[in-house]
Image (cartoon, rainbow over all chains, first blue to last red; front, side, top):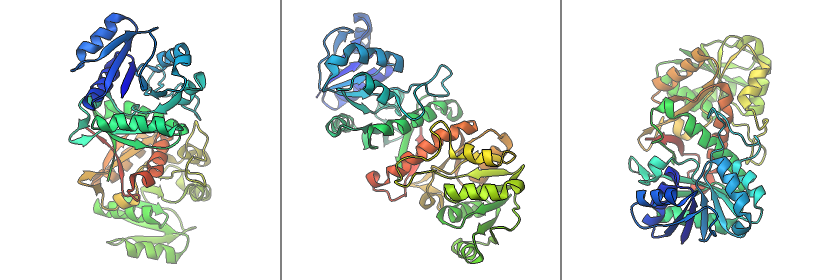
Length: 207
Length: 207
């Protein structure tokens, strides 16, 4: 599988690391060549680079940027995203990081999907932090990747990517379930001070 | 500490078991004496019984009934609950168990608090299932008890009860955080078929 990861930050790098671990190929798209190269250098293994404005290829596109930037990217690339599985990993937090900026009965993913109705949107990786995603496990537990979407083949592609990378994908249901995933993501983020885990914890369903 | 648990079902019994394990005393309140006695008999150890309509005592009152019944109980007991820490454990699910019946920007706990403004409401135990709460652990992990509320002493009382019972209390913040806890509770419930865990899983933050 070929992944295009829009973004060059910690989450983009961690996702690229998992993709390579699973035997897939990766292109990271930076806002300029320097950012893209820095991300490529930080990842162990070989990945390709591109910059904003270049044509978007790949079997799976991941929006690994903050929510406002994800909106910009979807608006910019709406035509090229048509028909493609697109993964929204965002937590649309407000400025004080204690609430969400999307409608309370909706989600970032549904807002993004409205901007590019022909893209096949999937919510995933918003409850995982880069620090745990990069190694793929925490204290011997594979990271749970919670997935939501209405397009089954698109969800399957995300699950395959996750599983190949040593993660534990869980299909949580339809796209509207992104609302609960974003609530869980907010909860996880707001607990970091309390838990003292410095964005090194993982939300996991244990049995 | 003296706990009054309104309800006689699996959650009421599991909470009573944890309370006894922590050295606290328990009264379960049933809709009639038979239900209360059945719950008392099912719990290992000695607990007291009462029936709906009896005066409510105790240092901590737990509403261990379904959301519509919790509303009825709060309306009925509003005067007696004034000043008391009251724990809402409900997941206000709809008839198809795939959404919540409370306002999307609110929570069951906030709705209940509006019915008895002088009670000191705390959200807790809505992300824990009876099957894991009863033993207090799953696969060697203490159960996380996610707590939300605006009254710090009331939250402290709930945390003490949880900790004494071998559980891992986590203060998630103000009462409005109940919204995210209920989203997490819904997510956990809806995943049971997918996970095949038969309400025997636990939502846990691992580091």
